[in-house]
Length: 435
Image (cartoon, rainbow, N blue to C red; front, side, top):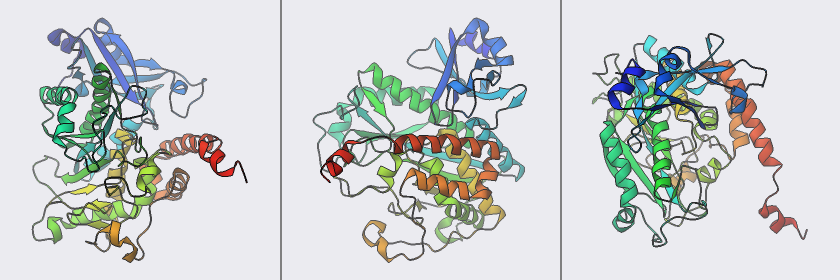
């Protein structure tokens, strides 16, 4: 584990560091710092005007300092003279409570106090588009069911292989890459890790994919629903909880249903209880609800949930238990903030464990074909405004994540919704011009 960034620069030939943080909307912000100045920056942090990013601040606020966490440093494989390092935001000697990485760090600490170590893996889907973002980049990728199409993935071999080579070089343990269910869509999987490490990798992965795509004259997007009629970009999370040493999976119990222990069931119970409120964070944009509540896609399925249900190894539900000792949350999409995603999973899960929450009835039906048979299961929000209102009503979840964070998040997201609501669309002209 790196502790001295100046020594890291000397040992690895690094000329510049990108001191990076992620704001409330998931935008990655950074300053490029020469290696000669990194020792001071590691001590004091790089200065930012918080108001200039998506944080709830004004121009009158003091400088926000992004203090790099040396354990997160990653040398850019495609530009080795630069290293990226995640940072923790402080202001006037105190942590910025609304800063997403700080929100997650607090949840990790809460879990540790309970003797728990949350580990997660994510599946961040993305599209490769033309640079203007209006259409997929491969004109031959037109199959009705393009998932796992070997010709299509090989036509983008240069991009996919380069990214995978970099993950191998970084020691992330990538283990499969495929063409996904939509034309122009891909998924690349790497090994699970502690929640904070996964969030840092998730952030860097998005940066890396976009950078490599640009290098090849393309544009990568994690937008939830970038192409009408096609399957959207999910960001499924695989979740397990371990003992403090990371050697014993507390969710694994072969004697229990689906191999999920009593502790795993109560953690899942918390996810189920808070699911509709969590959606504001797991699906944080107007466009997110074009994926969750989408009509049938050209491939035949959206692969996204719209109801709060859980199951065994069945991909039509919000949560599935594909094997012993873990479960997959299929709710999040590509727009989710990497740090807030992990934070809300832990907050909801710990709440469930504390209250011995019951996840409810398990359903094994095809929710897409027979979902109408389920009675009493909550429906996921129809739009961002509904999701924000549900999050606002969930006082326990807001308190767990932090009152300052929750207030800042809601304030900026309500403002975003209001901006969207005042936007005039082509749909309005088509449908109401002749009323």
